[in-house]
Image (cartoon, rainbow, N blue to C red; front, side, top):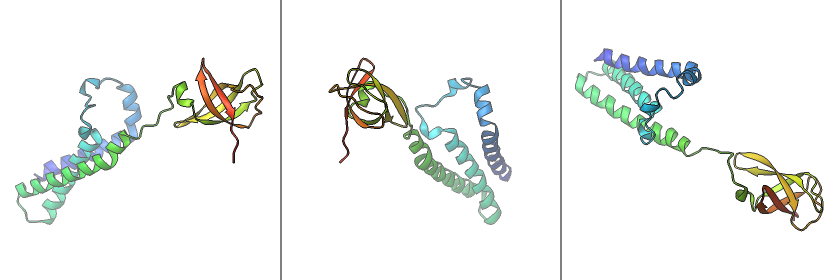
Length: 176
């Protein structure tokens, strides 16, 4: 049984080293190759959770085998329980929060309505300029026109009132 635990431990360590050192290279080479094995709906069975659990199973088995006088079956049960607990901890403390923390720079023009921006190219009374608006994880430069047809200088704060025809219509924002 000790050999089984060592194989689990070494397999997990080897997987971690290969993933860290060659992960991006292998990912690019095998891009889409294992798509048939995808487990998108089963987040609990992500590789980091499974391999982490197998590694803990091996490490706990070795530790209990070397430091206790327990028989093989109780050691296996305790190792499986420790593996399950650690796997659940990894899933709930790392995998699940990371899945929900995706940042995106995608937006629609209607998402800009109500946002505050800064004029980067002056907006003339009857023409177009440019504003810089913070959106999600980044910034976007948009063509802008003055809603009340007044000139707005560069550096002025503006609020987006309307977005249509790939143009945002802004009103100068006064800080109080």
